[in-house]
Length: 172
Image: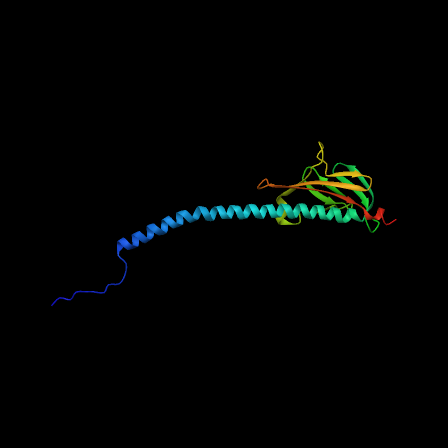
């Protein structure tokens, strides 16, 4: 008497090889898609960082200049003024390092962005006005700000331009 096995469990070698081939083809198609999505995510993250750095620099200058008086342009990349508390203050763009400094304390200028914030360390700030590429242009009590922030890794840049009029002139 011989018994015939009617129920078998498991995979055959051919089934396993077909499964491996299909899985390999799917992974081959998905890896470039995943890689492209990571590159896109890094690029958008970088663009966001550049925008935030430019916005922070402009917002800091606008806030201080709005309540200032006696605004003086020392050169294309340096302003001095009397702040709302009567202290001598200013802003200077170092054209070698491309870091914007707040000159509230002339003994120890503080970076507005870039050095103390690790993520912003790769963002450089440039002036962008006229042939001299000035950061500041002063006409009376109106200050025109022309700033370009550039990411050193991706080359992405954001250009921001605005004008500020000190309200202290109108409160007299």
